[in-house]
Length: 49
Image 1 (tube, rainbow, N blue to C red):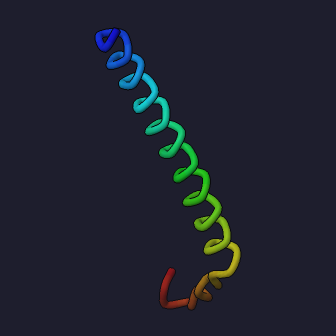
Image 2: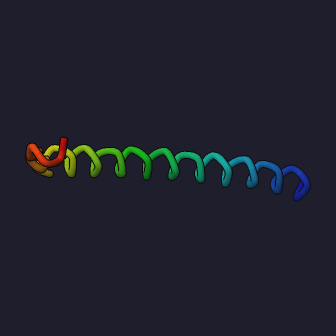
């Protein structure tokens, strides 16, 4: 039966990795949105144009 368990464990591990990666992406996107919202844009001067 071990030949059945190993592929199933591999599939489970891969799906957990994808789930963790997706969750990490969501959290990082949220952090970027907060940073963009809080960061003030510098004012352009006439010499910058």
